[in-house]
Length: 167
Image 1: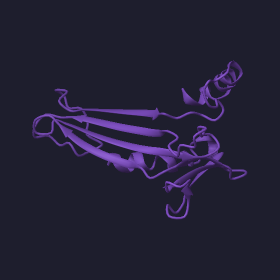
Image 2: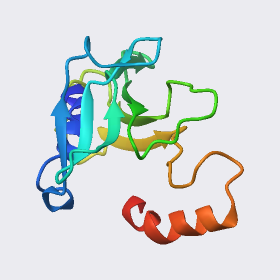
Image 3: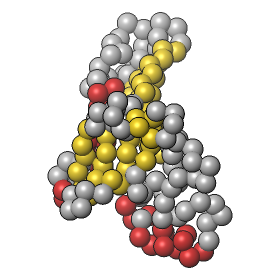
């Protein structure tokens, strides 16, 4: 199911397939790791494999599922995974605990009477089933760029070192 695929993304980042094992991901107890006073808990920490430095911390994923149209002809499943900390996330001066999020959205269009529950549904010969997936990083500010206004030196450093990983 889409929810399981999306909510496991932070753990996937720590697999050896990604960046040849240079980073790891570990789950932490949501009740013991809190960020500031609002009790936003880090659920997954993505760390470098050598020193264990917390590069990014992700909070509890939030998944919603909405059906649209007559007889649920479109189902939209959205999962937001908030960024709640880590060395790579830029914390604003006012210490807002929300540091952006990863958003995964799956749109499944179907004609009446066809299945809308399967992530593996294929487009049939008539083109009546269609699935689209969109991933987006929202409101995230990398610490290498810093808080606004971003100067030319910091912007150049970011573009020359990090943009290659994000394209």
